[in-house]
Image (tube, rainbow, N blue to C red):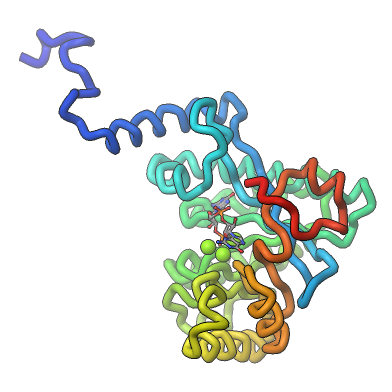
Length: 284
Ligand code: C2E
Ligand code: MG
Ligand code: MG
Ligand code: MG
């Protein structure tokens, strides 16, 4: 029967298909087109030296300016981009665009700023990753130590020996490495010690409960103590209240990031506000 059905022998979108699946399929179609149509953007969230500045750099965060659905967060499209492999070329674009932005900021005199880029597991596993990064740095004339690669604890521990090898290669070339979402994965302390990272980012989940939940205060103190033992700087993500800011600073956290101090914003906003960037209205 199949050969008699021809090209239009059946319809992929059956009326019975549930709306969620349809939305996902539509999203997958759009996602492939989005690269060509240049619909991806990077917004930048400032990182502050504790307790309140100066800004030491930014984390680049991916957004998709969808023609119909507006500005989409990574939660909506990253899992799909991972599944389809699109995350590899997309992630390479992120690295290159972040390096371009860094060089622009440096030309404007902000030579102390670093930019952190998030790497997905699939991207981290690409044999060409190191070369891709070095090529972008060179192309934009950016010093390697101004680029920070954020790898989640879970990604780093998926294949720990390989992670140590790749991160060693990158840090030997001068690039910095950061362990993201720390506390949510299962780290082997032996591997953690071998990872040539310069900082550890405490997951937002622990910061969120900081002022109301005694257990998390204990956990955060323990993470900071561990980081200090391993000679790592500590970044707290998701700082939303003055209480959290004060407490994290008191515990010895080096860097703070969160809506209290600065939301992710466009490079245009950063250029127009520079170092006074504080407590802006939500943009994304
Ligand atoms: P992440 O790397 O842990 O980034 C922190 C996330 O928390 C960002 O969400 C940021 O906007 C949000 N955030 C920052 N401060 C606060 C706060 O005070 N309160 C709250 N509630 N949230 C805060 P976003 O931009 O939606 O990104 C989500 C995740 O998507 C990131 O988590 C990262 O894992 C991933 N991601 C973002 N951009 C990229 C990218 O270019 N490549 C890859 N592979 N992953 C990316
Ligand atoms: Mg991150
Ligand atoms: Mg994080
Ligand atoms: Mg996270």
